[in-house]
Image (tube, rainbow, N blue to C red):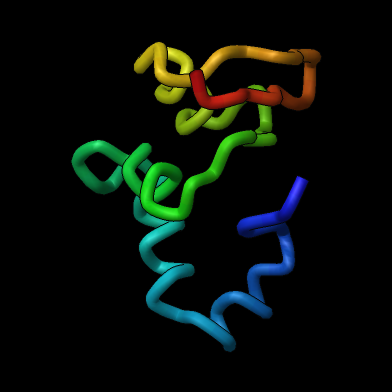
Length: 79
């Protein structure tokens, strides 16, 4: 699975600040339809912390299917 954005935030800020800001605004739910960034970049799978609001939001949209969940993380796949 090809990585879109991961925890190496300093790399993304330095190399594509606009993309990083768009990603952060989306995953922080500061934009309308935050899942659009995933659609725009054709993201098929998402690995997020179980507690992240973005993960809960994606599940609520029913556009993403839950593949795996434990106490720390969820893996979602676009339907």
